Structure formats: C-alpha cells, structure tokens
Amino acid sequence: MRRRCAFAALAACAIAVILGALALRVGPPLFWGRYLRSQLGAASLPAWYEPRELVAGGNEAPAPRVAPELEALDAHALASAAAYAAAHDSLALIVERNDHIVFERYWQGSSFDTATDARAFARLLPALLTGIAIAHRRIAWPDEPLRYLLREWKADARGGITVRSLLQMSSGLAPPAPTRAPWSAAAQQLFGTDVTATVLAEPLTADPGRTYLVQRADPQLLSLVLERATGERYAAYLSQELWRRIGAADAWLYLDRRAGAAYADCCMLARQGDWIRVAQLLLGDGNYRGYEIIRPGWVKAMRSPAAANTDYGTVLRLSALAGGGKAPYLARDTYAVDGEDGNFLWLVPSLQLAVLRTARRAHADFDESRIPNLIVSGARDFVPSAARPGGDISGLVPGH
Image (cartoon, rainbow, N blue to C red):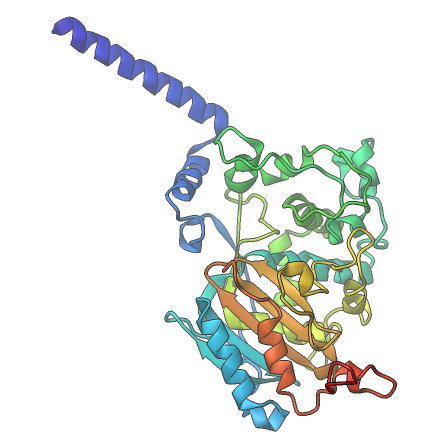
C-alpha cells in the first residue's frame, strides 16, 4: 500500500513538473488564462480579455434622430429589414441617412450605447489612420516599402512588402497553421504576450500584392508601421486623430500584455452605435459633420478594387456575392465593412445611406445583400441603374 502511495505521489510530481515546464515554455499565466477560457467557449466574450488600453473619445451626442419618411425611406421596407435581422439573432439594426439616424431596432437587451466587440470592424481603423499619416507626411506614400519603416526587415526580403499590400490584405506572408494547440504559433498570435514578434516571424511565401488572404498579420503590421512612423502608441494616435474627432465614446483595445501591443485586427470594445459615426466619415470621404478628418480622396481610393482580388478594396467588400450574398447589391455603389461573426456596415454613397447590423455570431444562411437591398428598394429617390436612360429594362418590365 505504501509503495502504491509513493508511486502515485511520484507520478503526480512528475506530471506537475512536466506541466510546469510546458507552461513556462509555451507562455506565462496571462497566456494560459486566455487560452483556457477560449477552450471553455468564452473567447467571444470581451469581458474576460485583459489588459486593455483606453482609446479616449469625444463623448459627443449622436446624430439627430428623425422619422424615416423625412429622409424618403419607406417604413414597411425598414420593418422587413428589421424582421430579417431579428430572425438571425441580431443585436442591433441602425439606419442613417444624410447625417440623421432614421431607424433603430435592438434585441437581446442591447441598445445604442451597448459596448460590444465588433470583431474585424477594427481592421478598418488602421487603414483610415494610414490615410491620415500619409497626409501628415509620416508615411511617404502607399507604395512605400516596409524596409524604410520596420528596422527588423531593413535587410530582409520581407522589407519589399509595401504599405499598400498590408492595406489590401496581400502581403504574401504565410499565416500559421490553423490549430489551437497551446504550443502552436496560431495560439501565440491569439493569446500570447508578444503579438508583434509572432507576426514579424511569418515567412514570405508569395509575391506581395498578388495574393489576397485575410489574416491577422497585415492589419497588425500596419498598426506597428503607424507606431513607428508617428512615434505614438497606436491607441493614442487612434484617439487623437480619429476616434475623439468624430465624437465617439471612450473605447478600449485589447493588449497582448500590460503596456504591450494592441490587437489591431480585432478586439476593440466600443459602443456599437459609434460605428454609425465611422459610417458618416466614410460617406463624407473623410469629412465628418463639416470637419476634414481625412484628406479627401482617401476613402474613395479605399473603394478601388484591389489588384489581388477585385471583389475587395482596402478592408472593404465591394461585392455581396463575394461574401455570401444571394443577389448583387441593388445600388451598384454599395460596399460593406465585414466585421465577421455577423457584423456588417453597409454604405451607399449615392444615397448617403448607412446600415449597421451587429450580432453575437454568424448564421450560415444569412444573406448579406438582403438587408441593404430591402432598405434601398424602399428609398423613394432610388433609381435602379437599369431604369436610367440607355439602361437595360428587361429585368424591370416582363417581356422586354
């Protein structure tokens, strides 16, 4: 009996030593806390992710609210869009036109002021800040090679990657294999305490600018470029040059460690209604309520099709069919910010219309084009392109 107890004690000690060694090799307690929570299904809940860094906002009043008919929008079309959103576990549906909020619906205890993690919406922010940094001559031009901005790649082939390639998700870097084993590079990118080192370690496996691939490294490297070019922390630059200037409420970025790097490809805890302010900025081509935040032309350039994938621009989806839409966008100039997990921000410059939909998770049967098309079809001043002079009317008039 004593021998069995002694053997069990030795085995327990051996297991403890092995686990302790593995823990030290793979990561500190902060890593393990995040990793284990993710395995328990808590990865989508922002409350557990610490530490954070404040993005100070201006905390100004939102856009004025008016009745939809005052902005020529049909109430029945809006109700149909809300019904579709409700049927797909949405948190919010907010419609803005001509700098007025004209329609709001909220579910699951949500409201305009609810702080949520809009996931990949965060990728839009370093792209907007890059336009500001170029206007301020902190970055020379969009095709500037990274060797002039990142000392680690000064004499590296990866230094030939350009800022534009990062903006258009075409760096040519190879992301880690999609596994969440704690010792993997993928787990280190998600939960580790040095996200900068993990993205700088990615190998170059394709010519920059030629292969479109949505991955963590490109927006993360773009935020690093902004820090090096401006001499400011990413959160501070975001607050000073954009978030505060559009009057958004205080927000928070998740950090890899205390005073470490902010995640730039996801993980921004912000009031969901404040993304309508970002929509106003985009529709104004960098102008927000009469104030120039970004030099005119930058947002228009972001909407230009990327060389590596013409369905996308700079962090913007130009085609509903590319993202799971069952029909093209009714208004041909519609584009979208896709925040993954069911979050969408649709913009129609020709109608000065923005539609925000947030959700906790994605639905496999969600039609990306359904909500914006319903709302656009109910705009009294919308003229389908086929109905314009010289257009093909066969789709509008049966038998023609």
